[in-house]
Length: 176
Image (cartoon, rainbow, N blue to C red):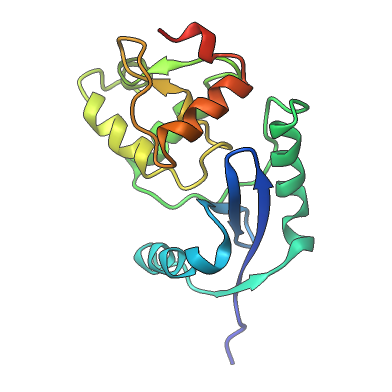
């Protein structure tokens, strides 16, 4: 008999709207912009595409550390996340996501700078694609990546959310 595996989720009200957070036994694997019920089909497609098996189960208890740290971030009490992650992506995407985690609170980098950081300076467009596939926005701060001209460009959650996050971190004033 095979043991049933679970994927745990809970929701958080935030300044950028409701977030649905999903975790495996290993760590946070997805943060989705929006409440769970309307997002359930999209989450199931995301899980299936990555061959992540398990039953989505609501568990406030299991997600308490994640929701607490996100809430602290949104209230200006946390600048670094200390959470286990369970990331699903290509080796290139994971390399980009590692680079994004080195961008400090209140700082920004251009797509070109991220490409240079991972040793592929001509992969600017690919950096944008990997950024767009980031499964745990905010914790992996893809919102801190801007255009080389200093403009806010692209964000999976929408530029309005990116603006709120950058303003919260005090870096919006630094962007032209």
